[in-house]
Structures are given as structure tokens and as C-alpha cells.
Image 1: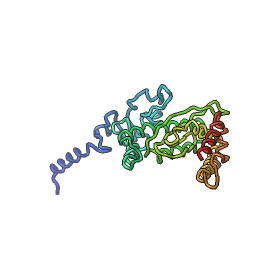
Image 2 (image 1 turned 30 degrees about the vertical axis):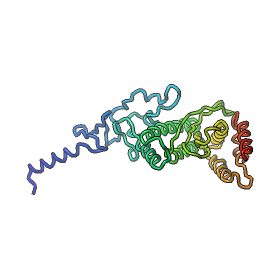
Image 3 (image 1 turned 60 degrees about the horizontal axis):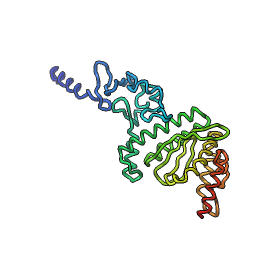
Image 4 (image 1 turned 180 degrees about the horizontal axis):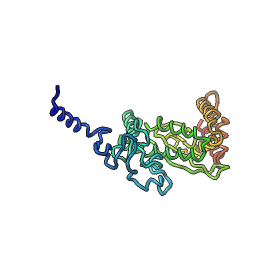
Length: 287
């Protein structure tokens, strides 16, 4: 048996300990909301009760130089009341403004295993900034050409899950590609030695290619143009044959750059054909 007085004391104790609940934030019993510091959160609706404190900065998600603002993602710029980009399982928002748990984990693993040397916290910030730049660029490319959306999404997935363990640099590049006047690409330098891969508007290349980038990037932009033309067929008709050809390079005299997928990519760019010939001649001279 528990007397009413003891039950009342137990209830008060429970209320005291239950003040801080979801993500350790303070629960306001009178309103039924959680206080995060910057704004209140409604758990039943999974929404903030006020707009993002960044205010009208979210109307334009780009800097003056045309680069996406790294602090805010595409969902936040269109929905000022969304919680952690509608992904509460994988992300957190410590004060109602940011979240970057995944970026921290990628940076931590990369630094622990020697894949990167920029420190955990610097790596976390770089991953956060770069991943949202790539995401915004991918969304822009899909809106620009939905036909090649699958390729760009594959490119984003490859970068997000496969290369954030390494230091990386992201830049947007507008390149002349006939018959269009220009076509922007998302070019990502990965802090390890590797070749170059084009998936939709996303181009991934290794740090070992930086010195001869003027030779390789026009060619990769040609693959981007192939992707724009072929859409979802690009992976099957160009991507897979190109990978197989690259794996055979140097075996029994096989030259990957002479393969039809590579020669076609060179012809798509204004300077690609000339750069392609220069690249092939350079490789022959090395041999």
C-alpha cells in the first residue's frame, strides 16, 4: 500500500526527472513543447513552432559568388519549419539551427584510420560544408535535366558514402559544351590517389590527377554530356563498358583512351578532342 502523500512525492520526483527528455532538451509541461534554445519543437507534429532564426537569409541559398551556402540544406531553404531535414534517425540539431552527426562520424573514421589528416573537427566542418554543396548542386542538376537524375543521384551516393572518409574539395564549374552554351558540373577532388569518375553532373577525381587536370577534366565533362543525352541508359551503355575498359588498360596492348566511350567523350567538348590527343600522346611517351 502507498499512502497518498507518498504517491504525491513520487509523482513530483518523476516530474523532476522527466523535465529533460527528447535529445536531452527541456520539456515545457504547460505548452507540451521542447525548448532547444533557438526555438520550440512540437514532438507530435515533428515540426518547429517558429521559422528558422536565419530568417530571410534562407530565401537565397547562394552566396554572392554563386556558391551554395554551406550552412543550410535544400530542405531547410524551402521549409523553414522542418526538423533536421526530415531525417531524425541519422541527424541531430543541438540548438535548432544545425546538424552534422554523419559528417562527424565520417571525419572521425577517416582520421583514425589515416585516410585524412585534417583533424576530426576540421574534417567535420569540411564534410558538412562540402556535402551540402554537392547535395544542392545535385538537386539543381536534377531540376535542370530530370532525364539524367538517376546518374546524378548515383554520383551523390558514391561521394556521400564512399569518399567523405577522405579530405575533399568541391567546386562548381560552368563549361562550354556544344550544342549547349554551357553546362555546370560539380567537381570534387578526393584526397587519395585514384582515377576520375563521372556520374551525372558529379565528377570525382584523385589528388594525383591535380597536376594534369587541364587534360582530364575536359574529357570527364564529355562523359557528363553523354549522361545528359542518354539519361538512365548511361550507366549501362557507357559507364559499365568504360569501367571494364579501364580495368583492361595496359593488358595485351589495350589502351583505354582509345576505347569508343572515351573517344566519344572527347568529341563532346570544345577542347576535349585536342586535350584527349595530348593526353594519349603523353601516355605513349611515358611508355
